[in-house]
Length: 472
Image (cartoon, rainbow, N blue to C red; front, side):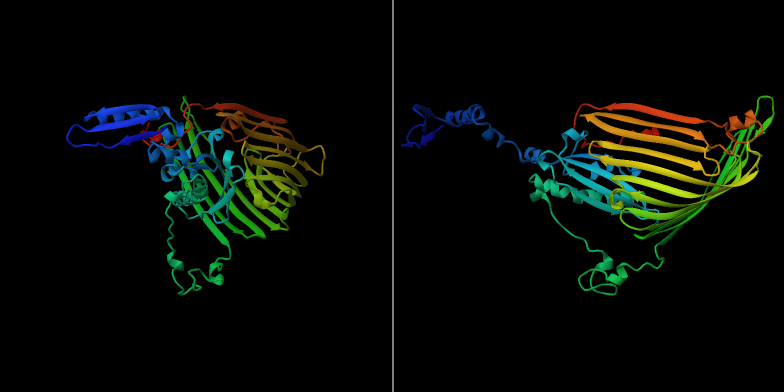
């Protein structure tokens, strides 16, 4: 469409504008020319090419369309705060369903010997960004506060999302900066001249990778007809390197409880339980580990005044251990012995015995874009009597069926025929009701299934923290 105009030929009279559209000529006289020109723009241009109409939108709308859509898939507990991430990272569009996303973020984590955790954040490109995948890790220490951990995860997440924003054309809106840590500023003591630490200083550990923890907790609940006190001391030590894994732990629970019945009688439920454990593991290769598991404990519920067990073991993982947070297929075999001292004589007529035992366990776990699943089988047997055994299978599945619809299934089944600790005498009903002892069972089954369906707006950018559940 051709627009042409001519300037007025004379200034003695009203201004005239002559416009032609193809073979049609419009003559506009006087001050109404400007009004009609604006009207032509408003009513004629929108009917023209859609591309021309899109250019009239504000830059803010254009920018919003360029922001990548991100779906967060997080199963690492309280440290994965969706509200915190949405508040701190505003250069992406957060969506509630994977089907609407350009990027699928998966969080996994594993515990460390120092009480911290190592978080693996996988960025999986979808749709136009398919194949644009990445992985970043963040490591917290056992002394980090929840805020420090959240800030570290947010920064790691922010860095990982930058490349996807650049991919959508938003790179021009970023400003890059770097704050050099004070410990690396310059080439002073511990520096190497280019702002980094010397290799020997960077890897020097005065504790030789050992970490220790000590805890003491307790609670008290006092009422007119009921009193309960509990004290829980604990201690642990760990040393983890690529070649070795050593875990030492101890725990005790001292509980004192009394209840007053309607006839004035008082019933007491006092007991003390404790547990010691030691795990020593040596890495043989990326797929094989060997170790020994040592433990000692008591259990009033299982008629055990004390039980000591030792079990050397070997483990094979089909996938490299570096991928264990995402997928693992493990076969574990242990062979050892168990020494028990019983509170009461057992149905086999003994108050103390040492018996050999072995155990086989196989487990598969995977976490993928469609969800996560796990299936495990384990069986154990006392070697002095092959008829004394137990075996069980357990599995769980969380599967995204379609947009907004998720299926959750879990189940467990076990056959139990190794209750060698069962007391010969009749177990009092009071002990059963108070949970001090339990009747033996030859099987155990458990199952659950549920669906979750969400619909409505796909965006989840807005955070409103008013009226939190804790105060309602």
